[in-house]
Image (tube, rainbow, N blue to C red; front, top):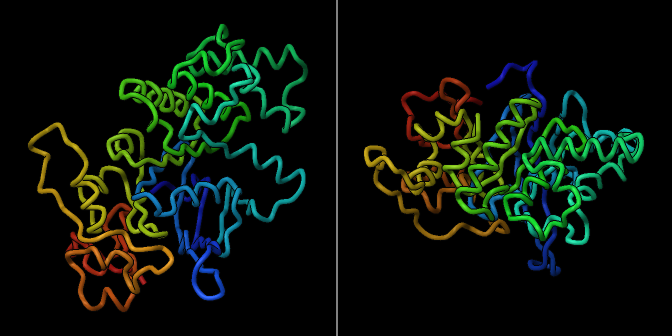
Length: 334
């Protein structure tokens, strides 16, 4: 965990629900986020992993202020962004940007690369002085992401998938953000191109001191890019800690099952595959107590009646589990 003075983003007890068809009266409550806690330091990459439907995208949309939480607090550099209005809110939005999953769907095919990158300046006026300043900054961003100024007048369909994602990254950088939320930014790319984009993100972070929230299903990618990892399951973060601690010594049974499924080239690192029972429960009717208990081989009676408190290991490694895998080394927090 980074020093408190280094914290850029702090989220505490964040809750978000949606009304969906079903239940009595034709409406049911889907709790997408249920008491989320997370921290993000300056210049840090936080990896966010979990199965589809666990709430990762809803959390990303909430951090982008595209959704308003039902409860909890979000503090960004000492500011509550949900309390801002008017010009203050518009100014804040520059500080958090997103790189999307699909580089084909996220770029307008009728716009040139230069127009795509410059589009944020149409909303956030006053950041460029004139057309010449705009063109100079566009060329600088294209150089920064490795495309070069000659790409400025080309349309998105003239680029490969990796090149399109570079344009998306340049567009996100146009407003000089402090945080970029990367929502599966390489999942639609070939393996060799993935490495190029990941290395670009790393180089930009070193140069610009940007923080990333990196959402991915690919554990090998997360291990490569993240400083810390948070594991989500049915709307809750059930384990978090340094990347090394979470990958090498998972404490929650669900995390251990995820790690056992990740491919490993080194035969010495391969352990027994942990096969989970059953299907992921519906978020419309999550299990009582521990939400993972219906699929957990360590579940006991207490798992059905009490939500587990956080169990903490040295170095800020935390898991919400009544029976953590490293139980002797863990201490309970109230």
